[in-house]
Length: 376
Length: 208
Figure 1: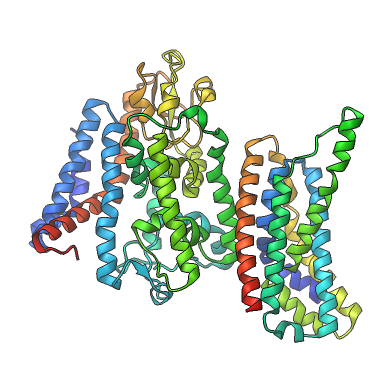
Figure 2: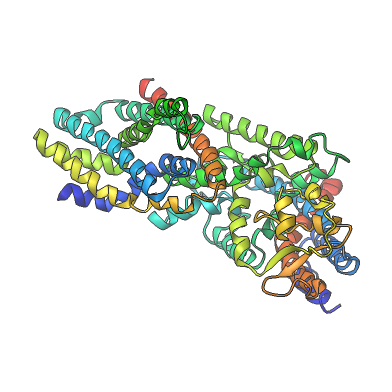
């Protein structure tokens, strides 16, 4: 109860002030309150049942699906379309996306310029650099790559499609494990190339999620090619391959932001550990891990690979209860329940900050559609 | 001295322009610091060749060449395409065996040693990429008016920019991390594809 209350109170900021002051659209307040209720109910279930992944996954998918439901109508209302024109970009109207973070580092160091056509301080667009940067730093310090399963507002898409089939059509043994290094290569390439081109190369050419948010207007052949690449990558990496493999292929085998977060796994206090005394070597965790972060060597070392997103799928799946969240520097036998609660708190807080408003606003757009016939 | 200072002042930009080809290549090779230093010297040697060619052109044409319509696009585009091709060859070729245990393997190793020239070629083409500091150097070198002056200017410019490449061979300290070779290979292919696309686009812009 002590753990639930602060989260419930903190997350009520989305709708409670509107209700108390009487300002704001009633339908919007209702949608936000409903989202708050769902979030907190699932947090209660997470704490009381001991299942983490089951409830996290529901929220994670909800956030990803809700984002375009709110964002695209907002784009259409604000700019007339979900396509960004040169004018919008030159005026800094693009919403800042955390995936840009690794690409802005070198140009920012060399020229003190943020190579993204967004705004620095929040003035009305969906994401301002300063806000996203603070959230990203705090989340990375607290959770490392936990961002990818608790804070990313895109990852729910491939989680959704990876959960749909009962069994994978492409078996684990058929996947060459060398592909797990591809995100690091993409990261290296885009960081180096963005410094030359002075533009975020990944956003310009390789981001599949442009399709569910915003993209450059197809005014030139170049822009048409870019859109074709976005569509192909979304269908391939986010829909088809997750359906075939039951894995989060975009997150595990392509996303450069995830690769960068993997390094940050080293600098925070939480980790996932395997108790060798309890482990029966059934290898279910290897088969279940959606991001290829468990392998034979993980079982030997008692740790997943550095790419672990702390999604807890392996923790929930382990029949022996041998896998648990753990605080670095403490004994493996020290209360896993305490470590889990200490991890869940910041993780859920991040999920709430990133997703609660998104889900509420997405719900509000649906309510608007039902009541007025328009989502705008 | 002016060329050296110009190179020193703008060397980070030159490093940024060369790093996408050089770093993935060195990572893929997985060599020691000493071997990396050798590769870097070859790369820089090639780059110096590119710069001296510019010095020659600066003397021969003055600033007129820079004003030629499509010149920059064509040169950079061709350099990009060439660099992409070399990078692909460099990382997709079969590596030579480390030691030739028998006569046959020794011959095979000698045969496959020709890629030792790859870093030279890559350096040369990287040197031809007309980056902003190079344009500055071109204008300054053209103003010297003599062949020797122009070449010396570019040589000094090259030395000034090369200072920033010194830390790169230390990548060899991580050569035991075998994953880095795979990452380097994948990254080189991505960079090569980007160069290929950018090169074709620039050439088309220069011709049309």
